[in-house]
Image (tube, rainbow, N blue to C red):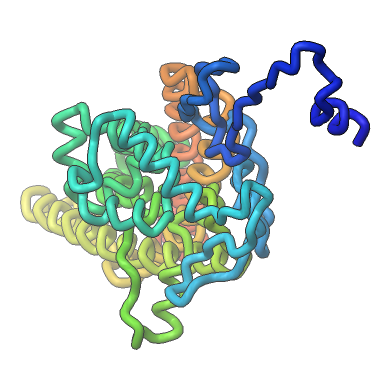
Length: 393
């Protein structure tokens, strides 16, 4: 009080000279960096940086969805089930949606772009305050590549690339090493029986190639750009609409996911991967049986030692395996190991990040192949060659 009185009193300065104090806004977007400031110029320029490399884990029920920059209270869901931060933080009374919208508009203004130049779904997300300025920055960066610009015409790829700019590299890693690691795993389990069980090995590798892409695509974290559901949508549709694509993904500012919604992500991806696994197995086993029959036609002596692979039981078993084992492993890999651990630590070292992701995904693929061979023998759809020889003796 005494300090304020001194400033307001005419006797404070013998020259009676007024002091001009610049007015600075107390509302800042995510990670502001003040590039210029002076007592004679009240204009401040705010630029946006990537989020802090140290992200906290999400408080699953409620909370702020795992984003360290979200100072708003983690509110409930809106009518369409998307979990928007419902509380108001201390930043000038603005909610997270208003802050996201202002951030995005500043980024567009700095880039010399207008809302009309954005895709309709992205523009609608900006208008509704669902995405922060960092997502717009990533979009503008990806758009500089002609191939990426073409790829982002497909909604699923756009949502995943906006969440992870290395998504396409991870798809290439997975599909590139899949055939080699799965073949190596088959040899590790079968050893001297590898060539005797070559038809089964071939079926496993074919199933793996078909499924590898979907194993990266489905559990990948996304930036949701989906339009709102119809008002008359059912309760189940609204619930799964509100679930993230990855159960462990970091929520954007202003969005939170409950524990039930994250469990729903596991269930939804499990159902999709069951369909993918069953379909890919049907293709793989059908091709294998065709090769076996062709071999029998050429070599009559091989008819007794080579049997057709059971199509239905193998397909269902592989679908269950992908819905449970593959689903959980890839959810943890993409949402925890990569997005929450590796990416925050190495986000400025993309080459090192890519190399470590390559190593981790290679190990995960090899582990999955080993688990599949053991699981297939456990449920009885594949038998070790030694057991068959013992039975014949």
